Length: 289
Image 1 (cartoon, rainbow, N blue to C red):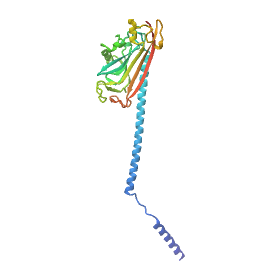
Image 2: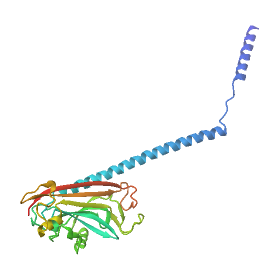
Image 3: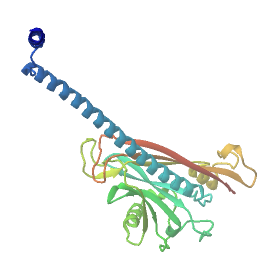
Image 4: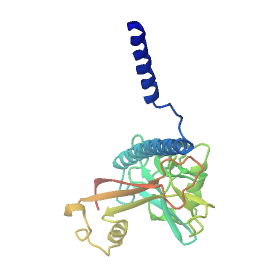
C-alpha cells in the first residue's frame, strides 16, 4: 500500500513537469527573411571593404611604379646633362620643338656628351657625340634615350636646330634602325597634337617638356661677337667674370607626365590619372672672348 502511494506521487510529479514544459517551434517566415537580409547586408559591407582594400593596394602599387620610373628617368637625364661638354657658341644642350596646329611641343633634348675627347673641342658636335631624349615618334607612350654612335655628321647644337632641314633630320634619326634606343619608361601620358578636344585620341603625342636657360644667353654671346654688347655687360652667372674669362651657367628644367595604372595603348587624354613629375639639372663652365 505504501509503495503504491509513492509510485502515484512520482507519476503526478512527472505529469506536472510535462504539462509545464513549452513545445519547441521553428522560425517563422518573417524571422527567416529578416535574418537573410542582415546576412546579405553584412556580406555586401564585407565585399565593399575587400574591394576598397584591393583598389587601394593597386593604386599604391601603380603610384609606386610611376615614382620609380620617374626617379630612374630623371636621374639618367640629369646625370647626362651635368656631364655635358660645352663651348661659348655650343652650350652643351639644346631643345627642339614641333609646332602643330598652334601647339608647341618642346619635347626633344639634345646633350653634347662625347664618350671621350670631343672630335672638335670648339664645336660643332657630331651626331655620334649626342645623347637625345624624346618620346618615341611611333609609340608616344615610351620615352627614349637615343644615340647614334656611327653617325659622323656635324650638327649645330643651337637654335638653328628648329629651322631648315634639321627637324626632318632629327626625326629620321629617332626612327633609324642604326640608332641605339633605350626605353626609360612606357607610362608617358599622351594627348592629341592636332585637336583641342581632350577626348580626341588621334595623332597622339607624349606629354613631355624641356626648357633650357643659360647665363649669358646665346643671344648675348652673338651680340658680344657682333660688337654690340660689351664683355662685362653680359649676364654672367653669380656675376663671376674677369677680363679674359667668365662663368656661364646652363640649366635644364624637365616636366614629365606619367599615367600610373594604364597599360601601353590605353590613352588618358583627360589626364585623370596622370601624375606630373618635375626635375632639373645645371652645370657651369668657363668661357673666354
